[in-house]
Image (tube, rainbow, N blue to C red; front, top):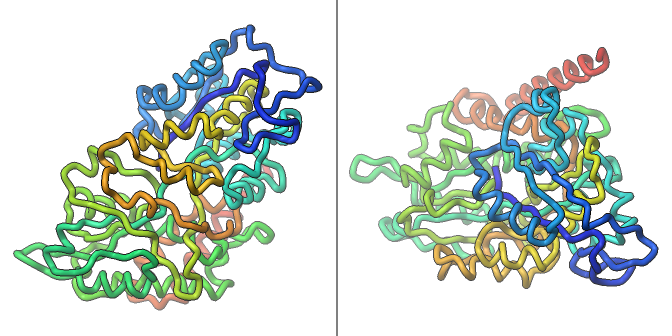
Length: 440
């Protein structure tokens, strides 16, 4: 999963900009808007599903402390992990949930904690235009035209590559503007056995590649609540592009149960037998990078769309329906999307920005030595692909795409059969889920 964020503007304080909204998303001063009392203490509980990604110390230094410094009347309580129904049954109140777009359905929607923040956006004149537009479109699709939260940070869409392996085999480093076809040729050159070690050129997370595909193909159609794997011909084209990497001679040693993100990531960062890793879920830590001789290259593009990267996979901060301090919680998540807050986090290399300001991206890692001399511009594409079909099913069933790859590579199935069978499994599960929900 990805990394994290949080901070707050004193609701009653003078909030910069005009009534139509500040250009950086801060809340505008407006005498007609009733301010939340900044003198009355309030505790906001913030829930994140994956404590290993954001340990409390990291969360508080990145989000909690900046929020409480900005809003002295606010106390942030961090709840990392656990089952939300059990937390609520124990009397816990959750004011803010933050989760990636893929993790939003199981943690926000399935617990019926979604809340449309449109009234707060209007009330405080918040300017959505300062955020990357496809991320807002994604949020609006998920909320049926409303909006449940604001995108605060986004994982990279980039190629990490091991310079030592490229040097070892005399292969040129991946270049800017690399196409999928060129990536395939690089992968062939780097897939070989040497000194009793099997090396491969390429690794990634196929479920995330599918969910964030550059063609903006829906995984599950919102209108029909059915998988598009067997009804949209673009899935065949997309799949054939990926499957060919695993059919390069030299990949045979990879077992069918090892085509998944953790195994792919380990081949690059831990085993160091994969020369390139397409990263789409997290910034990788100094501990994970270790003494790896690495650099970055831009995400590969299709030659028909040379300026388009994958869809964004942002993490949103959501005000919950159960919060009794919705305005204060909104003020907090609004602050997290300001340049005032984000600039320092970017310079420290904490996360990548969701703001619609490409110049701001170049500040990333300025204060962090692990990024010295690295091609940090390659972390984010110049242009994200438009959001595909966004709904509560996509994140839940993206893992089925790993089965498509396994069936086509290891089980001898043609791609049409693999896609059709995956669609049948997804559709059956959706029907069962919908039927169960109808009986409640």
